[in-house]
Length: 299
Image (cartoon, rainbow, N blue to C red):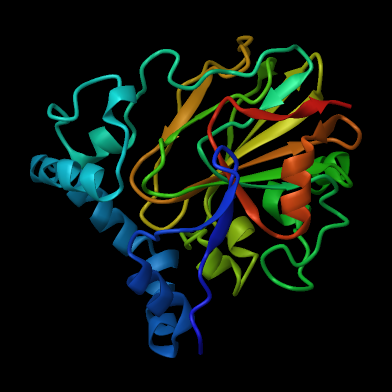
């Protein structure tokens, strides 16, 4: 079977690029081969591999991986909040903070922003979208939110899938100003959220461990910001205070090691996504862009 590369549109460069997948051979073997599928139950459902790798990335010896990783993936050390030479573990580097101003936030009370660095798939009407990873399969809002009544509020609304790779900045932020409620944990598995896996089963997105936070926004109504754990990402940390008003772009939390995902949901008619995101999203093509860039305007 020919290997299908992962391609995305780079918003700043205005070109289509091919993703350099961290651990690609292992991911493809696990999700694309019969032998790999036999281990998937233990790896994803029992969290064994993710627990072990997370433990390794928290050991002092893991700090030796930091500089080679920076060089291999050509990361911009000038935007790090602290020197690349003083991270105590790989995880300390992985969920690093950035210098103030490293991610400018698009201005305007009616402007929403991207909540994270990564590859974004924007769907203006989630109910009308099918086949964006798996042909013919629609996103199951009720299963994803774990609440049928809440899902009805967002039916026909807009959805942004923001996929973070290991090379990305791994803190996530509020896409709009508002007042967040208590985050709700939905326990689940730790499947990969790479398109390599999602092309096989879209339901990994609503089978994985995730957290759902409702945010009441003056300009956008009620939105849902949802973080998804994945293989090698068992930990989702929230750093905000529920019930306290937040500014657009304010940090919400962070992921520990691995690829991961943030899904942002808007109710029908509450946002108009930017045209470039909608155009590429309708073609099933993710757009690489960074936290703070424009997502769209209030409907």
